[in-house]
Each structure stands twice: as C-alpha cells, then as structure tokens.
Image 1 (cartoon, one colour):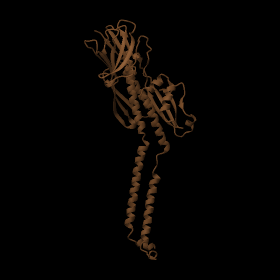
Image 2: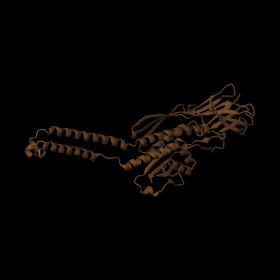
Image 3: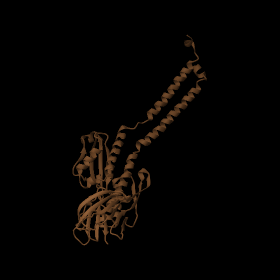
Length: 246
Length: 160
C-alpha cells in the first residue's frame, strides 16, 4: 500500500491546485483582517466631531466677539478672544495636537458699512466680522483645513413715517442676505437724537414682502423727528444702528 | 461486486480526503486569526457617536450655550433626555477649564448605579465658548455683552 502511494503519479495536480486555493484563502483572509481592523479601530466619527466642534465654536466665538464689539466698539476684542481660544484648545482636546491659526480680514476683523441716501428712506448699516481659520490636528494627520467665519447683521430702513399714523418699516438680514426672523419689539430701540427717553413702539407687526421677504413694521410715539436712530439686536446679541437724518 | 473489487479509484478517494483536509486547515487558520469587532468597543463607539451628535445638534441650534450660561439646568437635562433613546442613561457635568464643576445640580437620567456596574461607558467632551448676557455697564442702555467664558460639557453614556 505504502509503495503504491509513493509510486502513484496521477494525484499531484489536484494536490497542487488545492494548495494554491488554500494559499488564496489565507491571503484573502489576511487582507480582510487588515481592512476590518483599519475601519474598526479608527473612530472617524469622533474625529469629525472634534473638527466640527472646533469649527462651530470658532464661529460662535466670532459672533460673540462681534456682539461685544457692537456694544463696546472694542477693536481688540476679536484678536484677544481668538488668542485665548487658540491656547485653550490644547486643554479642551489634550493629546490631539490641535493648532488653530487665524487671519483677520481687516486690521481688527470688523467692518461697518453705512449707506446713506438723499431721501430719508433706505439707509442701512451692516456690521461684519470676517476671520479665516486654519486648523491642524497632528494626531489625525489633518493639516491646512481652512474655514471662514463671517457673521453679519444688516439693518435697512425701508419707509420712514412722517405722521404718527404711519409706520416705520425695516428689514433685517444676516450673512448672505438671509432674512432674520423671529424679532419682536424688544429687539428694536428707537431714539430721537437729543432726547433722553427712547421712542415707544405702540404697534409692532411683521409681514411678508416679495423683495425683502420679511418686513418689520412699527408705529412710534412720539413721531420720529430727524435726526433719529434705529437699533436692532438679534438673537446672537449683535447690535446694529442706523442713523437717519435729512 | 465490480465496485468492491475495483482498485483503481482508491487513490482518488485518498486525494480527495487530503484535499479536504488542506482546505479545512486553511479555513481554520483564517478563522483562528480573524478577530471579530469586539462588542464592547463597538458599543462604546456607537454611544460616543450618539453623545457627540446630541451635543453638536444642541449647539448648532444655539440651545446648549443658552442653557449652560443661563444656568437653566432642568431644560438642559430635558433636552438631552428627549434627544437620546430611552434605554440610554446619561450623566452630565459642565466644568470650567480648570475642571471645577459649573452645574450646581446633578444632571442625569436613569439609574446612576448602572454607571458603576457597566463595563461599557462612553464619555464625550464638548466645548462651549460663551453666550451673550445682559449688560453690566449702566451707561449702555441697549445691547448685550459677549464675553469669552469657555466651558466643557462632559457627557457620560451607558445603556440601561
């Protein structure tokens, strides 16, 4: 029997073929193993959220700084806050190797744009902060990830009343001309320049308009006398003022 | 009778058995080194994802900072409770950057003993930078103050 097995010449091909198949199975197994471990142990979702968290909070900080600037006009506030944020990121995400750089669009990062017209209507003021961030996270191999934070608030006067029965109509927009909804009379402050007490808003309404999308309409007491100012404060705490004078 | 006396096919049978052994050996070898995703690790990743999404969503809507800086702890707890699945328990701590606790009341949902007994606890840390507050300067009549006052939200999650 032993001699017969050794002398048998017909079975080699099948054995070699089977050995090849086995080698292939083992190779594919090894390949699948490396693929599974690659996707299994890398918490990509967590990395994304770290990046999203930094991005979102950097934007919030620019909004917060713009809020502060709109009230105090402190030119250095944005730079001070961003420097602190850069420093604190290493405490918040220890071991990640987070490095955040930024570039301000202007000297201070803030820009106020005022438009005046010969008539009393359609004057507007726009307040913007513009910062370009550059994020590096060494532990994730992320370098040069850029994002921009450019919060804006714009107040445009559409109609100015000439009698107590007429309304002051304004529109408020954010970045990209997106209308700001949900404002109430609490968000507006109107002052006849030279008088101590603010003008009382006796009637407040908002309505849809094809051109401006939403218009805020206010009846004022006493009647507005030139010059006067209209302030709006949005939900982010950013304030913008328009001065109307003949 | 011919099948019993036939001698030529025996070698083929032995070859087939040998081939089967080789294939079985190869499969066993692959199976031995193949590590299935550990359920504990998988579960932690899922809970982490859930926690991050909850905090990120609340922050995107401007609610997270609003609740924290206005110290509206009850609404913060409720907002997280309604966003998470019912069988996920949480324990939330809001701290300053120096690790001291900001929330005066305990913020949790579910049985706290589960956190000490469970092997699978997920912990998520999320930053918040501040929120506009009322003016402190009496000379300014209208507006808000936006001060940088960073906090960390630490959300621990476990399945009940």
